[in-house]
Length: 149
Image 1 (cartoon, rainbow, N blue to C red):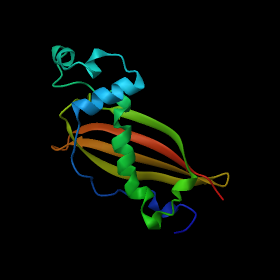
Image 2: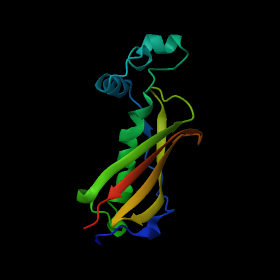
Image 3: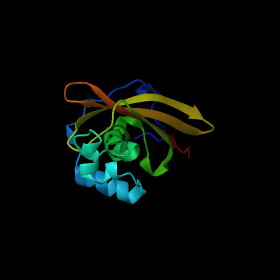
Image 4: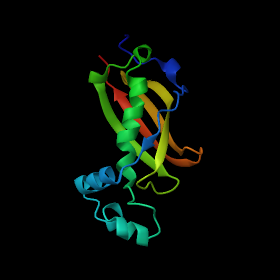
């Protein structure tokens, strides 16, 4: 493995991941761990009364699925990523609709950019989440910084 991320990976998309079923228990656990106080995140009855099929995930809930999907790139030996040198830069979430318990999401990873800056590499990835029908649900964009030697 090289010690520098390969800029040729910019624009590369990886095959879609397997279907991930969103669990009510995981939503509730995440909401409690992050202090998301709305009953829509923890009370199935409150969520149903608000018109949702199940408890509603906080927007940042998708970070775990996005990071698991990014592993395709980070663990790709040809990408040149030394994970011991990775620092998380930022994360943004775009929701096309609320994520609720029972959703079946398919994540697809795209490496948007790989650029050098001040002796480090700045990498932007995007994980798009769709329904099985192909309808957009959300996108998670991450910036990773790979520290130079």
